[in-house]
Image (tube, rainbow, N blue to C red; front, side, top):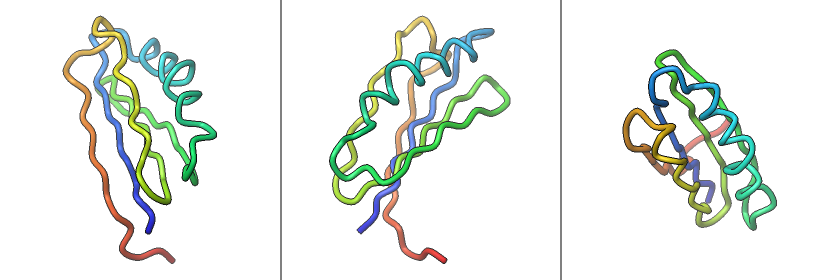
Length: 86
């Protein structure tokens, strides 16, 4: 079974690049090499949003909370179970 864990944060006004840098410096190293990690992808979007999607066999490792001053609102997290892949 593959689980996709999505972690999405909206940066405080003007802090999107800093939030993305925090994810690259702290969040990615914390999950890289964890048992069951198959793949990870870091994305950004308008509205100073940063999205980290990780794919796991088994239970996902949680992504840490960034410093509160980087956030425009609380982090959102979702997990999905893979149903079909082509």
